[in-house]
Length: 122
Image 1 (cartoon, rainbow, N blue to C red):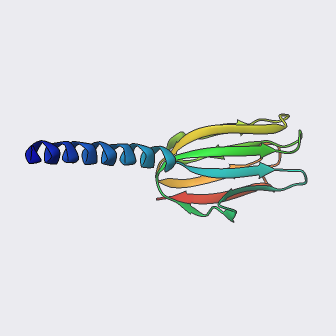
Image 2: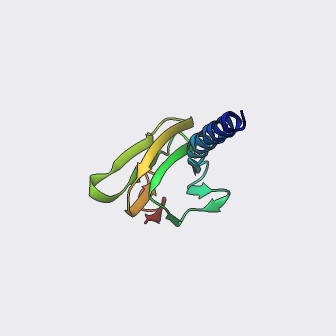
Image 3: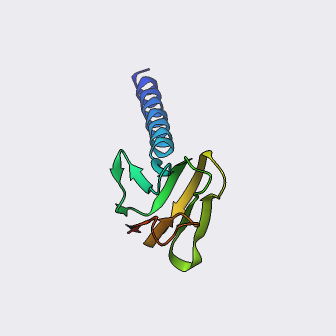
């Protein structure tokens, strides 16, 4: 009887551990928040701080496009290019991106010379 209870306890503990790992993986996707407009501004933040370095991995990216004359695009290594919020869209777009090691540039495609930022993924 004691052996049965011990085995049962081990099985329950293992199931709990597997459940915790599954939830940890699901909730570990970090959210990056980008905005463009209303003036000639563009940014990318995580937890309220400007992004300069990130670890390789999968990120949820939420773009708040606040002006029809602007957009929000992202270029990276090996030909990576995504137009996350094209001109003249205004509103919010959410995408999930897998970022690999390298240098990235986010920018407004209509005003790239003045509206841009950079970050590195390692």
